[in-house]
Length: 218
Image 1 (cartoon, one colour):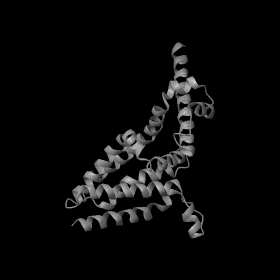
Image 2 (cartoon, one colour):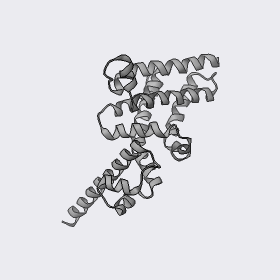
Image 3 (cartoon, one colour):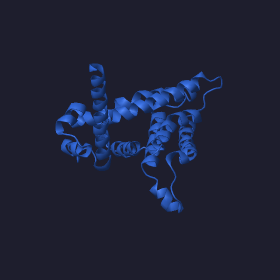
Image 4 (tube, rainbow, N blue to C red):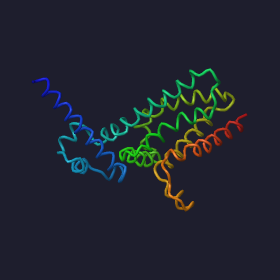
């Protein structure tokens, strides 16, 4: 009986923690870090200030935790794809690497989860603000470096700095596409699709840029 009671408390605690993180994610995405208070997050989650502090800590720590739970899923998917590519009997191609890096994010963003849409808006906000890089770079950079290693193996004559710049611009294109497709709809006169609907176009666009940088590096 005691074990069942403990398990129930743990499950309720985990559900409350997710509710706090979801609320923080939505507010940070909609208004930015500076405009959101812990009190606002508590109200959005329907909990007390103490509960937010218990599950999230300081606002800065809560912000990082909100990012970490998404990054873990993305990093795992990207690493799995890179391992699959390296295990194949055929040589690696740059297109495979671009696809392996972009598609896990496009896939998650296309599943209709409103929290992943909030995360997309949040990331689009923080990538344009360099003050966040020291805080969150360590979450994203290790996997990016693994892909850069693979890219440099394919194009060893290209300075790594050039590949870094090309991958950074690739990521910016991906984030922009996921966060908003309203202009595509407006200019084309057609309803915008989901992120995965643009997968091939995005990969082709980004690959062209990377290959152009590589050609210049020769």
